[in-house]
Image (cartoon, rainbow, N blue to C red):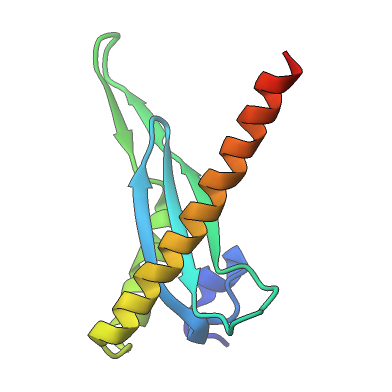
Length: 123
């Protein structure tokens, strides 16, 4: 039996490679993004994104309370436990991680700009 059964249900089987996670609230969703440490040249994804629908409690017509999905609470608790046992990143590792994210963002932006330019040319 795994120490992290809820993470396994989501398909996160290599918990030893998880380096961090982020949680962002969107309009009707909570978005959990899990980041992995991968070797250079690895074909495996460096992150996975999961969407959890926020539940609606209808109190009256003017006010709607939203609550977090129960599975998300379980997942974040397991991720917190997992991260507690991880050593704190050193500055050099942190810089490397930030540079990797910047490179990834740069390639995404370049791709989007190229696609937009191609659309303008075709008009």
